[in-house]
Image 1 (cartoon, each protein chain N blue to C red):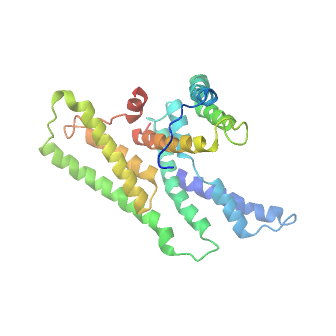
Image 2: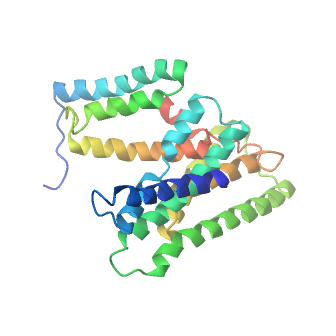
Image 3: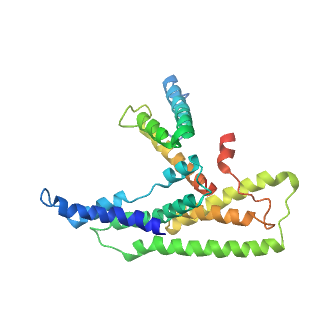
Length: 194
Length: 81
């Protein structure tokens, strides 16, 4: 959490320092400094994941902290985009608050939903014929991903955040007896094989 | 025009596109192995093939590659790797 807040706050704070430094040269207004700081504070999720997986840091604590901070920064970046785009124009508070509360609600729904699903599936495990595990996992992963993308995209939060939550809940559900066949299916390797 | 007219791509297009895909992999592998940042090489490849530098790929192809790349990012984030 601290990493995420520092990642967002520090560039914006640093860009405000530009004002007293450069006021002798040009007129730097607060708005300009804020816009510059906000554009510099975004974290690229793709770069984070690619470098962490190449350096094999994903299972360590450092990797987890960095990934979580990147997720939070992604949601904040989404809010920043709407803020900057609507600064001169009239500001509708609904457009700014929407990604935040939709993300919080999504987090709660996924957490409680997967706990409930695990309890139910522990009682009544799904029976899948032996040879069909691969296909079943593919279809389930595909539908889950497309559903989460659609839900997040139309509800107004960040798509990558919802897909990350889906991945975490899939790992959670695949442990134990709940949904043994539903090991987290690597769609990437399947697509490469195609 | 009602439908997309099917044309076999010209030799130039085929060579440029396949060279692009191969270069992405070839540049990423040694960088990944030794300094764990194959991504930088891939970004460089994309920049060279793209609009300001050489424009070997036209703007529609660049758009499609970017969109496919976002789908790949979704899959990467899902896997958690």
